Amino acid sequence: MNRFQTFTEFLTATSAHIPVFEFIINLIFAGLLSYILSRIYIKYGNSLSNRKLFGKNFFLLTMTTMMIISIVKSSLALSLGLVGALSIVRFRAAIKEPEELSYLFLAIGIGLGFGANQGVITTIAFFIIAGVIVLRKAFSRKEENQNLYLTVYNHKPKEVGIEQIVRTLQEHSAGVNLKRFDETDELFEASFLIDFRDFEQLNEAKYALQKLEGSLKISFLDNKGII
Image 1: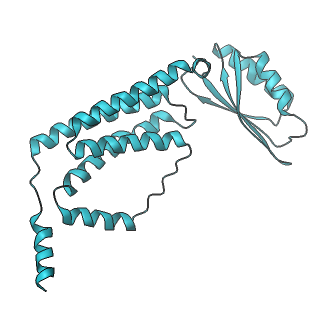
Image 2 (image 1 turned 45 degrees about the horizontal axis):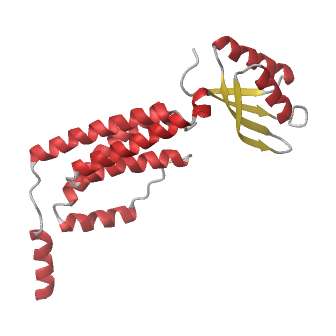
Image 3 (image 1 turned 180 degrees about the horizontal axis):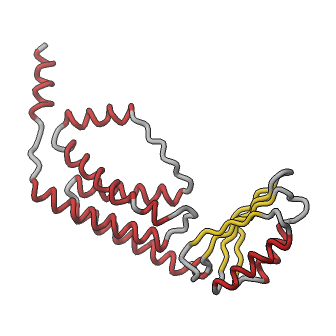
C-alpha cells in the first residue's frame, strides 16, 4: 500500500510549469517552418495528388504535435495517458504515396522538436533536409521539364495499344515519360508525365488521342501549370 501511494505521489508530483512566453515563441517558429515545408512540398514534390490541398495539413499537424508534446512532457502521468490513448485511437489516413508519408513525418518531427524545446537543433535539421530536397530536384532535370500528368483509360484494350498511344503523344508533345501501365481483358490504363510547351499543343494531343478511339477517356492533372 505504501509503495502504491509513493508511486501515485511520484506521478502527481513530477509536473513542471510550462513558460507561456517560451511556448508562444516555439509555436511561432514551428508554424513558420511548417509553412516553409508546405511551400517546398508544393514546388518540389512529385506526388500525383493535389499538393496544395495536402500541404495545408502540415501547419495544423505541426501545431497539434507541438501542443501535445509541450503538455505531456511536463507530467509523467500525462505521458503514460498519451500512450494509452494512442493504443486505442487508430489513424486511417489515405496515404497513397510514400512521399506524402515522408513529409508528414517531417511535419511531425518539427512539432516534436519545438515541443521538446529543441528549436535550434530542429531548425538546423529542417534546413539541411530542405536543402537536400531542393538540390535533388535541381539535378533531376528530366523530371523538372515535364509539367503535366496524363492518364488514359480505355475499355477496349484490344483495339488501341500502348504503342499507339505513346507514338501519338511523342508526336504532339515535347517529352513523354511512362509512369504506370495496367492492362486487363476489360480495361487499359496508362499514366504519363508529359511536357507541353503551350495550351495549343495540349489540345492537339487530346484530339489525336480521341481519333485513335472514341471511347478513350483522358484525364489531365496539373503539376506546375502550362498556361
